Image: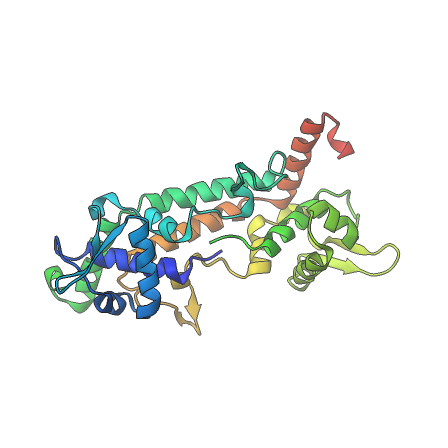
Length: 152
Length: 152
């Protein structure tokens, strides 16, 4: 029951892109450094973020990656689910070909706990705005380095 | 970010054992049927529950598995963590040789969201008592089958 490295790196990349000046783009090398991730692996993660519509990729000398929509409209939940698919804390909370994935869910009381836990997790991740996370991270980093936020 | 099948089967087994009359034991065959799990796989799960002190295993004609402590004192969190280890929603919320597992946690605002989500998840699972889950499951099953609870 743990976030994949792919999703973790995807979140790091999204938060980094959200912290860039408007209309800036970042190269794969810049993103790999910023997210502390292997470039080849991050490339696949970014392809997934492109295909799910969260970022755009541009070729050429002024190319690179950028957010497709304003960071204020993107939430941690969007990024995690773009990479991992819908959050499903236990198999029993999902569907299988439109039917309940678990035949015990009509009576199993544990199913209700998993549903509750999953709803709470989605609520917390769904309230965490990528723009806010980027700003807070920059402020905290600036405080640690004792430098102005705009220099981060 | 999903519960393993091992933990799911372990939870089913614990809830089943909690629903048995006092001092009853269940064989591996009975537990495999009740949990709808493959016997060989469930055997390994039960061994884990034995080694972590949640259940006892007895040999002989009147042998079988039983809870080691009263079901009222066991919570869903105990069972999940007995099988999967401490819940760690993201690598960054853990430790590595006593040090933070992620060097970004002093400034990364996403880390705080993962900490919050993990604490909430542990709180929900930590409040779900195995005895209550067993009773509720039996009541719901009895209602579906339109039979008295004691016949379940």
